[in-house]
Length: 385
Image (cartoon, rainbow, N blue to C red; front, side):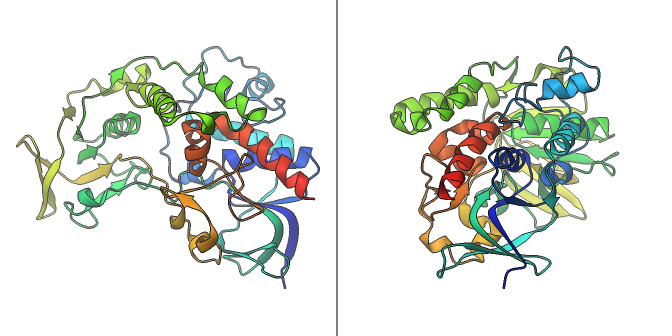
């Protein structure tokens, strides 16, 4: 027997999950949030990090508890607030949660099943608690999807590398030598943070040309995301060429540019950028890593950091892999197939955040999209009542 029943179980208490909770409360939907608020942001992002988000990328589907109004509550304005620091955004999220009265249960869902008898969902948690829900909204974010290419992993000694989402504590970085694999914003920001933590040297290796330091233009993104409210299928109606063009445009802003505020922090003799290179061989020799790069250059370091991004593979979500729904969950390229309400092929099971990027566009890897998915999901949940 379940310990608790609810209309909507929200799994994940990051920006997407909190936005869904706010919209559910507004529509009078009984809900339960499972997860520690902003846990991935607190545990898997380094102190001192800055966001690429704009101040108008807030969490509230009702446009009431915005970042602008959070600033007003502190006697501040939006002038000079960007780039937003990680600490600032965490404070905003905490304020938002309090203003909305959102209480999250610090539970880890270990198994999610669908009941054959009544078509409800049964979630089993790490505490042994069992929750029954009529609908479930998953907001997994990036947590389960760090990308470590197999061909790269095969060249590296076990235990001598970490993905950026695992390597966020720089307290022991002083006098150490690092090699960062990757050439986008996170690679360069981790390099800056490591140098500021006292690292002896930081090498940045990537196969492509290095991005330029330039101001990104995000102004065109929010109108496209807001269009989802009235025309949720506009992205999927695009031809593949049109989707590719849109993806390239976002890629150009988010991946081919580095934030200008990062440039002075990187211009340091201890940072060496190695474009158009990749690791060919890496040997652990008496505790030192001897790395041979594709251009013949050799680098000696103490640790390798993989800024290799994220890649969705829905089967990597443990509670889905442990449950009984994965086989009936329609997927394409590792992504769940979603309808116009972010609903999967399992009725009543909704998924947003990064797993929604294939059907709704690349914007769903960014917080600018939290309000759009919250509105669509809660509208469908309400209609199921």
